[in-house]
Image (cartoon, rainbow, N blue to C red):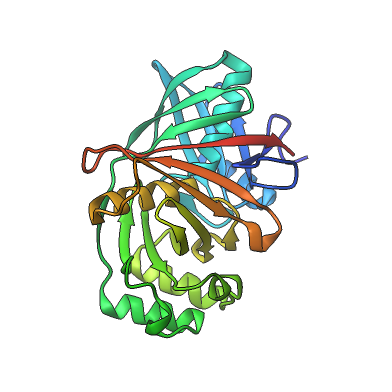
Length: 274
């Protein structure tokens, strides 16, 4: 047994077997940092959320199998469902390492309000290196959504493709991907195909965390929402994201995009127990 109070949940899952598995450990005090890293590594999920009461809310830290991460969306959604079980539905402030967010907890699901967003065009050398990593050519990218560095608590590279088939055939070297992401301070590389202006298909490379791909990534969804707002994309106030389909773990994320530039994005999804 890794820890007697550790919960295993799948976030953004609309049915059993879908969504992104996350660990949640809600305790009176946070364990020591080495113990949190040990638990996350032993569990092996892309992230584990550790939470303890602090003031009017909860102090939260997130650990991947190999390192701590500043913010994790799917683990926050999973945490929200645990808070609803323990303390009832409601809005809970969450104090992260360097940011304050909130989760709206409900039975069977949750919504988070992300840290502030920002975005900028991705530098040409980074784009070239990412294309080489995945074995793609620049002509395979969708010019309607140019390569973008997007931030919502941590940094993500957004690469949009012209067709769904290229996304389905994703393959890359995990060690090379981890090196590239570490060199550029990236948490994920969000690979996208826009089926329409409000529906996206996503595959999210998370090599730096020791995981080739996430089946659902709330932090990247928030960063995408902020970037679309900055670009003037016709999002209509909300987008739907289908992720994990090519991994056999179908996931559904909804990101609501307010009009104020830089404000957090509301990301919602359902939760299933594992």
